[in-house]
Amino acid sequence: MSTAEELLVLVFKDVWNEIELIGKDEEKRILSIVLRVLRRYNEKNKQ
View 1 (cartoon, one colour):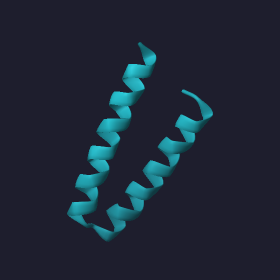
View 2 (view 1 turned 90 degrees about the vertical axis):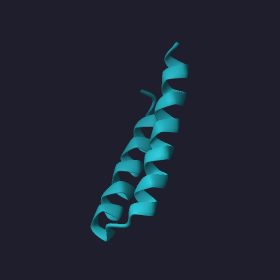
View 3 (view 1 turned 120 degrees about the horizontal axis):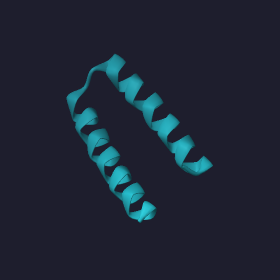
View 4 (view 1 turned 180 degrees about the vertical axis):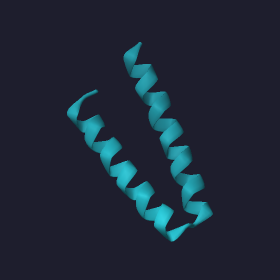
């Protein structure tokens, strides 16, 4: 993973933790979509 990707993952986890504290389902749904897209993008880059 590049430094930019690692930073993005850390930021994402931090944002996710904040939402866990708030406990809002809509934001979680949006973030889970974003995470899936990022993983898909990451897989394409590995190939």
